[in-house]
Image (cartoon, rainbow over all chains, first blue to last red; front, top):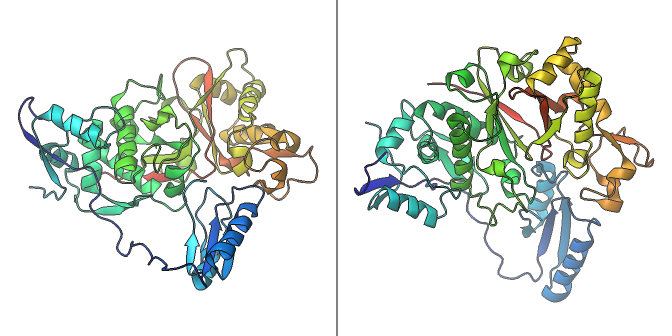
Length: 100
Length: 349
């Protein structure tokens, strides 16, 4: 232990290295004419209703062209590539999140 | 001389360091041991401090040996504990473990860490009386170090990225060892394919322990019937999400069961057959309510018949059976979050 009442140096426990390429995707300038996808963590009930309403709102208010919807197979497990790939191929932006 | 690269922070004295870490949210709410370069070097020992194990979600901070050592010093660990902490972090970084989900769920789950093999005895990890409670430095400080790593490198800050509605006291420290000496069966790590002389740590996201008091029975059927009764409680995740679940038998219960020539496998099968609930009971709980057919039961569970009995997990092997604890006839059920336990070999450099 460092001595009491004596100045000392301590080291930061915070991370100083982060994954390469772990930057945020470019933000969209506008939603108009874009395809927006939702990735549902498969916890909501009844299925799809919230996202149906939200998707319709985006179309009506923001001029979104198309809305895609996908579900994780389990909310306790990461989304598999076969779920993510179609979204990556077609969507301009994907809305996902942590928790519910 | 070991070269460390972490940011150096000058402080007026050790108490100022403790207050600084509190103010910055770098602790679990308890005072830390100030991680001076000298103490961190001693913790790093013969490891390469810049070795990178991976990135801890959801903040994805790099888990270098140096950063693990800093958090281990803060938690009050001895240098000899570092290999266990490294293996614990490796276990959590596997895809199977899904640390991103564990760190951010609204569920209370947190990993419990079970140490098996000779290192548990070498380090005096408590596997006997009070092993799930307080009072034992290896259990308390290694468990705490793993939690501090999840907070500081992974950003698992309660109420922020850690969305747990409640959390539970195991989020301070939740590390113990199997009581291999008093178990009538093979240790858990041997059951998982490791050699007896190897040491492992098993990380399992779960709730707090639920005690099952049974001083009355010596018969395996009766002892295990009571444990299955506790497992049948609705509301925990296993009935809806499956994954693994955990039962820790006290040595006295285990001895009574083994005296009747029951193997660990028999225990698992009995519990799997008995810890069941009809769908009519389960449909009012979990995530889906009236849409209960969505639950992740095996295909053979007939969702069209409310009297069908759903198992607590998909197979008997998904019930993880350990022996631990001291004298007394109390065993423990620990419901899982709905994912798998991961067992990692502990390597000592």
